[in-house]
Image 1 (cartoon, one colour):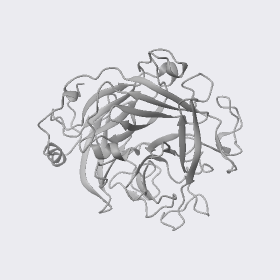
Image 2: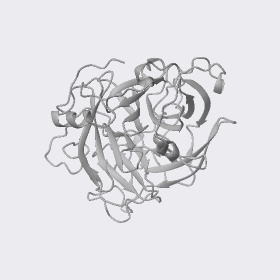
Image 3: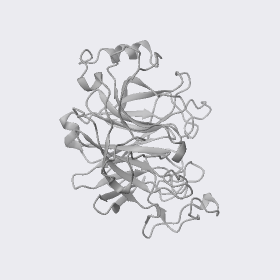
Image 4: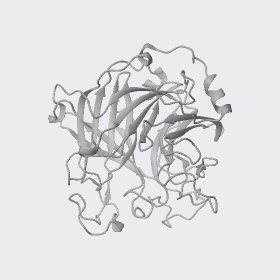
Length: 403
């Protein structure tokens, strides 16, 4: 699709972007429009799913019913999936975000990576495990909500996740924004890594420095390079001073434990949109979810783009090709009992993972109990769909092996 000629980078960064290897040749897939994706499988985790024997939550939500559920809750809800990783045994690690929507109301929500197993035969999603995120080694330099150093949604707003070859997790946070490095048991391994020069309002270390990023607009997506060395965290919001609707994509070297200084820009179709996730296809291309803020009848834009940092049209922005419109998915076999076309009408769709070179899994963040995109007045389930693309991604084989 055509992209407006907005410049979102400095001249130096543009020069770096334009000299990447392979910039001269476009694949056939990038020269043409992709057709309609098709729904292959459907499963859902019920909204009323909680961690057994866990701690109470939702005490800051009041006592009035919200979409059929009355807070507070006796346990921790398994909800808010904002990142997904595929495991070799058919299960998936999914990241619950900061809890109930913001720093002020999520102090009793424990940050957690859940392990789930979709059963597409029954249409259910089973919860088979999970780990709480903690800071037992005292790596966080500011005061935490809990004295036992179990991390909560008042400490961080974790929205993106990747896993390196050693089994450790890197998470992207929105309150800093920070990068957070955890071991496989969920223990923080080092101090949160800030993004130089960018400060969200919730950043506890900014002092008198004005915030230059809107609240809850930090690292919504984070991709990992095929060789596993580089991370590419993508902001959800525009940094003050950048053109409206452009989002910074930074490069972080895990070996050097530092940002490299290389940066690109992704242009939203509208400044009112947001991104939901970003994963890597090969050394230059990303799958990025872009969405509006609507749900149900007001949901219009829920799309997955193939974004290329080689910038062939030289406008200083990632090139975008639409590969899946999540509001118009072909469903000729009426998978899940839904009609044709199938729509994914949720406010926040924040998870995409490659299953094979032509197949993706996509999950929503149900914002329990606040979102009601599938049925008005009824809290959304966490839905897990598998879609078949119109053509092959031609993904790097290392990326396919990882997933």
